[in-house]
Length: 318
Image 1 (tube, helix red, strand yellow):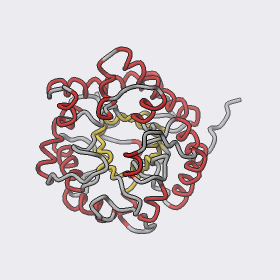
Image 2: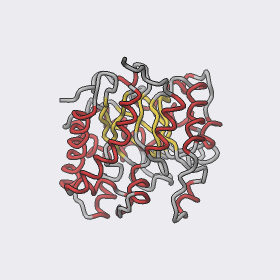
Image 3: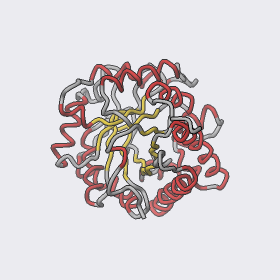
Image 4: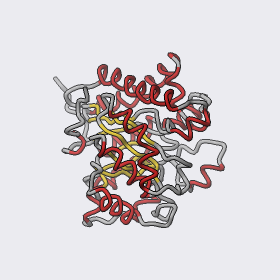
């Protein structure tokens, strides 16, 4: 049974950590070949599942040592119909894989959760197309397209579904509507370009307001991911109502643009300490942002630095 689906603890206060750039870590640090950037293929083997567990455990150790919560996102960012077809997985196989991803996270939660480190399980959903380009779907088409993943996660013990690296508000509306139909809490995370706007040119504020207007405010909260803080800080406006809907950040390590990252053959891991300081400033200026993790180029070192900058040391037991 879902543990937190009816009451998400990260919406009630306190800092929650999340993982970093799963795919870039696996490719560049672990030397794993991921077809089409799809980490979900590792769920198909015992060796792959063990590798994913070790990946998550580095972050869970940080959260537990500091007494903060953790959001466990599944390795299913690419586990949707179009990307699955490119890899050779039909809908039946994708349903099985998406469900298996939650089973792995349940195993981790049983091993790592403590009273001071609640572990919320999220079913991760990625865009239909390239995460750096604008999709062309309208909201109705997006709802139909993403229904498979949402319905699969709803049938598991996942606490929520999260749409990451979204560039088009219509796709976000579709995911949110599919989640609402399945009584699933939903998180929407947009990515922005170096000017702080979506790739379509829409301001982040307008994208969030559009989704809320079209869905009756059904998303539990919003996030920003796959962009460096220098790209999106300019888009944030303290005191405005919409900014209170943004509860988390999973930033890139690199200050490079999406085009530059796409063309790069080497990993740009940036400066973990500097990234941590930027998160510290973000927390001071926007204290409602309390789900903190990383995206492309980040690993457990970056999340540790973010934690160091944003979380008071856990009290020592004599």
